[in-house]
Image (cartoon, rainbow, N blue to C red; front, side, top):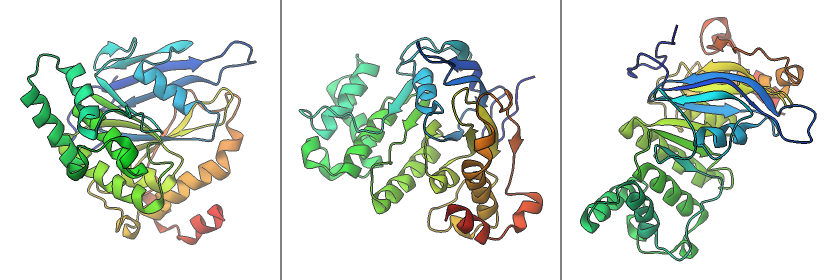
Length: 302
């Protein structure tokens, strides 16, 4: 039986994205990087995946994007199997991947014309302006990437991905190279855009706080080789959470503690295929864990 939606306000009768038995092995290696990866994403959900280096997170994202082929398993999006790249899936990489000879507006317009080749110049310009405004770059629309800061370049990449109005947005640690203040600002902007567009998002991150702020659901990967999604953690805090106040929610520390505990301790015991093929779903922000003190997290991090 297909899962029912887990996020309030997200209406769907079946998972928008369904991953079944996904595995990836490379020639000359003793075993697969990951195997028996199974999870679902509902339409409109923001899902983060966290795990130590080498567990195959980026490879999974590339398979979802159609940029890489899995050794086994299937990916179904909106009822159809993913088989190659498509403008139905927008990707934002760790690097901005902008064309340096084009301005901000023309970088985005290039993607828009790829999606809607019959549009007039006026239609393209209006569409580009909408998404440039959304990421706060109106004053830089005629600048080339060399004249932009790292944060501004990532904003252009995000605007370009949103501008093609994909069914799903795939983010590969897009803020990892940014300073803390810039990263926080773009996180807030991303949340605002996702709420406005009801975008479905799959994002790789190593930042526990980023996952707690952004994600409706967090997938915890066991260590490789033979890594798996060991646990699905549901974020039960309100969806309108904000970076400046999220830590005041009584569910915040139990959720954060649970993620840190997995990364620091529990993931070590779940390598070499020891994790379950069908991960349990937990809600650490509810029940007895709601009384866990913040000091638990601070000791774990230290």
